[in-house]
Structure formats: structure tokens, C-alpha cells
Image (cartoon, rainbow, N blue to C red; front, side, top):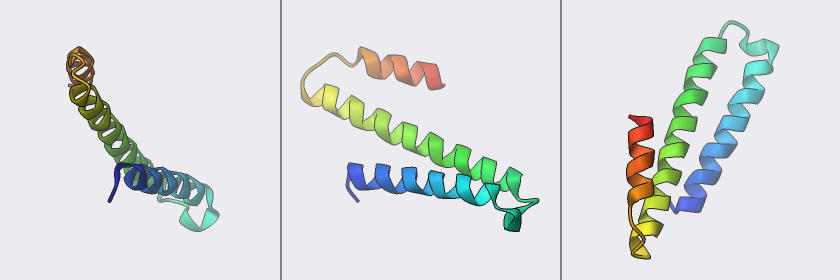
Length: 74
């Protein structure tokens, strides 16, 4: 799966889960949806961070930003 496809999938999945969470059919499952959304958002963040680091590395730009982002998330 390409970077763009993976980001689109995760983004759409997050939107879908947020819609489902508002449905009365899923009443009582709010905590599950919140945890799942949080997990997917984290995964999406890490994928985007990795892509940025790869772009910076491939252009021979210093990886200070990558190190900064990694420290911030730790």
C-alpha cells in the first residue's frame, strides 16, 4: 500500500468511526470507538512522521526535525 493510500484509508476509517460513535445503535461502545480512533490517529501520525523523515533524508537535509519529532513523542 502506498503512503497516500494508507493515509487515505486511515483518515477515512477515523471519519467513519467518529460517525458510528454518534449513532444510537452503538450506544455504550463510546470508549471502544475513542480508543480505536486514538490508535488510528497515532498510527497516521507515525506514518506521516516517517514519510517526512524519509523525504528529509533523501534530500540530504539534516535529520534534526526527525530527532525533534521523535523526542516529542517519546
